[in-house]
Length: 403
Image 1 (tube, one colour):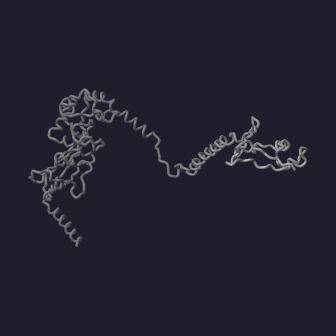
Image 2: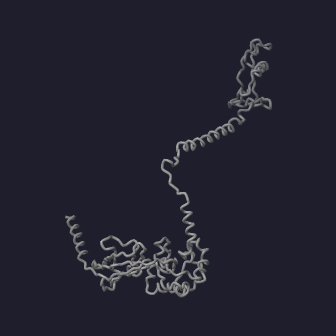
């Protein structure tokens, strides 16, 4: 059910578009290398509503989805009008075509169509051109009545009087659409790129202006720079970016120079791109091996160096030498746990033999074959006398028993 409803609405819309009455206009004649502009307004569709914000337009070649490549369409939200503009080149000369513009009323969804025939007339392209950027205007402002005439009047009356017969605007486009940045403040203008052309020879004043602005060609923009003709443009309401000002002349290169350039171009060796097999291949295995081997060698070297520094230069590996003899200290009998009188860590077998022969007579250890052997040495020592408190009250007294 849903599919049937959508299909019926599609057929109804197609029928309404085909049933829309067509309004035909007289043919428009466009010359080669001349700017053509047309404002698309509700008056073209015989709409009399005062709310122009409710109308939208879609132009295209009749029977095709879009406009010719040299023709553009933009809708101005500032004025709620559409504008068709462009300048055909030499290859489009003597062509004829029709532009179909569909208008939509967004309040009532009413559509109307107008058909405008176009014819392109051949004309000799201009030999000298002037390219400039106007920073205080948008592209839509250049379509105002009298604005183009004021711009052309600057060159006809002051800078280029020889071009009064055939000077025309050959190109116009928004600076943003050609790559310039959008202004940070919405109230600022985007700028417009304008080209003017003529077959007349360049005047002396234009040549002097070209020499004056030649050092500025390296900069992309310089609105701060002023020239000797700055006031002439300001009086007409134009602010020019002199870094984008160019004078292009086809007569600057002589025939001799042209033949020399062509001869040198043909005498040069033609460069041929190499085939895929001739291109060098990159060996990643060698690079990975180098990337791993070199850090590994340095790491092993550092580990060995640290091992030598920390292990083989330590005091523990040096021979310990005693600088003072061991001193034996006699403690009184009051100490419950008298310390050991023999240093086991520093003992020497030779010292042990000497100590056996120099023991005190009070030793209770039997030594066989000793010349000082006596019966008194055979007797065990009696325990020390202790008082009632469990501590010895005086010097320790040993009682020996006669046998």
